[in-house]
Image (cartoon, rainbow, N blue to C red; front, side, top):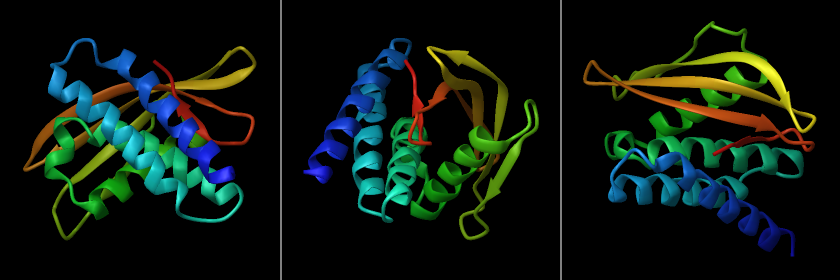
Length: 157
C-alpha cells in the first residue's frame, strides 16, 4: 500500500514537471517528465522510513533535470552526485552560494545555486539554478522546489 502511494506521488510530481517544459521540444519535455517519474520510482526503492522519502525526492529532482537533454551524457554516478548536491543546496545551502559536485571518473561536474527561501502556502520554497558541465560546456536548468511537511523537496511547476 505504501509503495503504491509513493508511486502515485512520484507520477503526480512527474506530471507537475510537465508545466516546466513549455519552452522546449516535445521529446525533451517527455524526457524531463519520464526522467522525474523514473527517478522518483528508483529513489522510492532506496532507504527506509524518512530516508525513503528523501531518496524519492532526490530521484524526482535529478530525474527531472537529467531526464532532459543533459541526461543522455550523464552516468549513474553523475546523476547521484547532481541529485545530492541539489538536495544539500535546497536544504541547507546559503543563498547565492554554489554547492558543487564532481565525478572524477567521468570528468563531469556542476554546481547548484539556491536563492533565498520564501513561503508559499506555509511551505518553504527556493528558486535555484543547476549548471552541469559536460565536456566543458555548461547546461543550466532553473527551477523552484518547496519543502514538504515530511521534509522532502518537491519541484514546483
